[in-house]
Length: 117
Image (tube, rainbow, N blue to C red; front, top):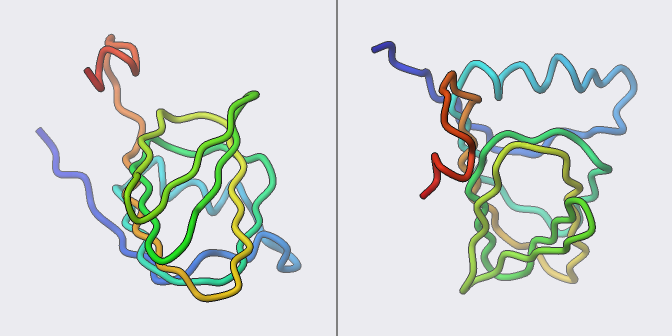
């Protein structure tokens, strides 16, 4: 059994920064566990791939869309996502805090639903 490294990120990337390469950025989520712990008052990401993750938000709501469904995390609710395509946004009047644990894809014959049960 090999140990999967864990990276800690203290800020969200700027998808709109000139030269930002989403494929290069996403490599970290295939190779490592990633913990994102940061704060922001406005975040807006278009549809993009995301790994299995647990998402928490404090002092505000964090919104996600995937397929035709809308989800929110807040002080009392967290979200668990299987990997897939999603968008992410918040527009708050004050700074909120995020804690997000992302897990790399695994090699297994189990489906995502079976794995989480």
